[in-house]
Amino acid sequence: MHEIEVYVRFSETDAAGHVNNTSYFLYMEEARTKFFNELGYGHHESLPGLNLILASTKCDYIAQSYAGQTLKVATTVSNIGNKSFTVEHLITNADSGTIIAKGTATLVSFDFEQQKTMPIPEVVRTNLEQFLQPQ
Image (cartoon, rainbow, N blue to C red; front, side, top):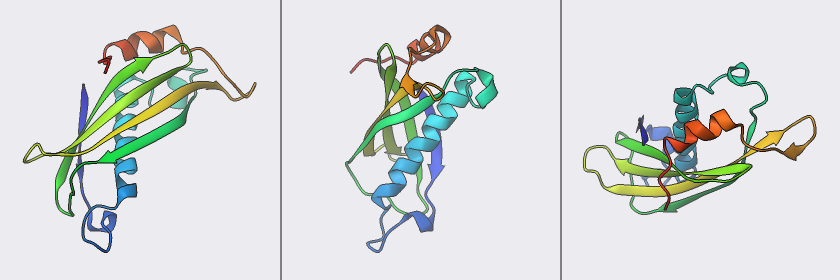
């Protein structure tokens, strides 16, 4: 499992005083970015030919969170297909461990020149398998 902490800023809250629903997608994106950085894919030139596009993302809201809190975002891989894979995100309150939200993101390996999907490179598949926790 890969884990990051996110400090909730006041600007990420809404008129009701809790974190706005769209902010959770930013937290999950930050977690995915840092996850890929840890795998060594943080720069375009780190693995030429590797292009991932986001095909789907989803978030289920379980509890509220507020400005000033620190949240943990845990990322695991739940499925690896031929051309796509899915990551799961679990967002919890860092102090209490309360589950705040659960999300998923499906990423597709894509060839921008040919404008079509392509198989996930074997080295990437092997690295993703380290974090595989089928649901």
